[in-house]
Image (cartoon, rainbow, N blue to C red; front, side, top):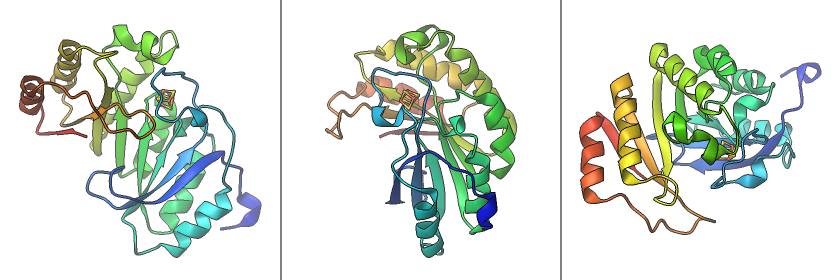
Length: 225
Ligand code: SF4
């Protein structure tokens, strides 16, 4: 990697081995710091600000040493598409021979579109139907880019899943089912509902058996996690 070409990504952390961030894959997870939204249930609010805690050289060095031990690398956040160096990081990781996955909340569809030909998998957060978005994200008009991103992924032809972080405190089961029906109607094949965890505490609220069965019937692949 030529040193003169190195920009300065804003990175908030690195998980060297993960079995849960890319379904079916053993992956390293690179957390990109910075997100313009302020979801009240954010799993990692420290990553909302662009405050770097790890250098790209450390990440790159570890990934260089782990070649052959991992299936791929996932860029997560925060919102990784908020960092202008993301395409550069992806290219660097691909040059090491890794497959690349992306977690995104769908905030920047134009950036996502520019990345699709170098991605192997995408996990798209879909938080609710459009009417509920602003209350969850703290940002007006936040739903439109998400549904544009979803259309991009549906037209892409690559592997992706939609996922919803769920708690009955902000999404009734009937609202979760309405959302899932809309996603299935649009052609989503893989859907996951993630139980809300606060500070890694185990999930206590689960959708009812009837709701889980209804979700199972809507998608070829569905998962509660
Ligand atoms: S979009 Fe994701 S990273 Fe950004 S505030 Fe919401 S939950 Fe946190």
